Image 1 (cartoon, rainbow, N blue to C red):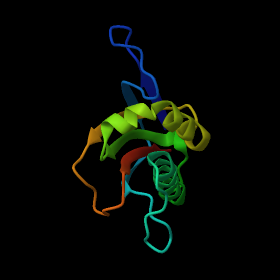
Image 2 (cartoon, helix red, strand yellow; image 1 turned 45 degrees about the vertical axis):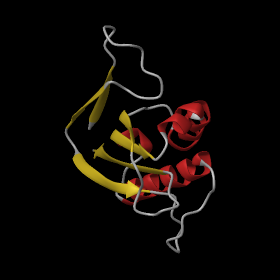
Image 3 (cartoon, one colour; image 1 turned 60 degrees about the vertical axis):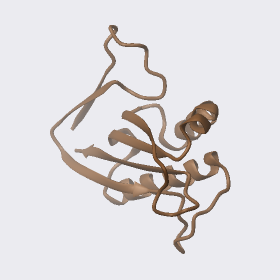
Length: 132
């Protein structure tokens, strides 16, 4: 499997994402939305950064259980209940991403939502990966 990240010079320089990811060969893994749930099904963390770290960790746990690594992520969508807060903490969230997932950024989008399934959840991540 190869995943080629495409960032055309005609588009603004990406920061923390890739404009496109071309995947050839391999298997697709579709990753369900993950929030900051612990193993007891309770949302943990009071801040966006804490919840983001747990939600991303949960997404990566599902990916690893499927035989993948963070570099295999082709697409991630972040659903946030407050995009202004997300933007305010973007640098910190970027550090969390790099610590947990590295610098092979997938194609990404951040979408503001009114609420998530769990009332206390501030953020949810889903996506898909291409495995060899």
